[in-house]
Length: 211
Image (cartoon, rainbow, N blue to C red; front, side):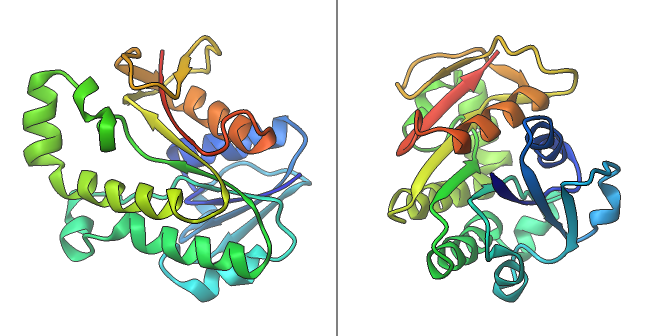
């Protein structure tokens, strides 16, 4: 499978690149600074581009079989400059996918978006989602809504607090609005995102993941 990963230079995106390569896929990694991605592989194509620029995405979309969106702002200041950080780039990706007949899409969102808000404890719900991270959560809402309305074979991943460390492959994933462990390693999130585009199991579902 040929997989395009948007926001691939570090964090969960870089780990998704590694996991996809481990699974034998060909990967195109689009990032503003792809040199930050230290991986090198015969099946990896690193491309400099902007998640918020339709031309950048169109330039790497042809021939892909699936897209994984992990792009995120480096700081909250970027959300002040662009409160539509997630949704703007996702809109470009969806439109480009339709133009190039690419069907499979997995998107990294966050636990606490949409109906999963009630799964957060009171302090996190009020302080983080309601005040400190209100703008990013509101944009994740817009992002999820457009993904759900896209008509593509989509999967939304809603992890809790992200941690470092190796993948354990014992995480819980459920499309039901029910409690999952409050944290999960970035490596396990990356594993799920790759799984999400490999098979039809989670198509059309927003999935709570933790563990």
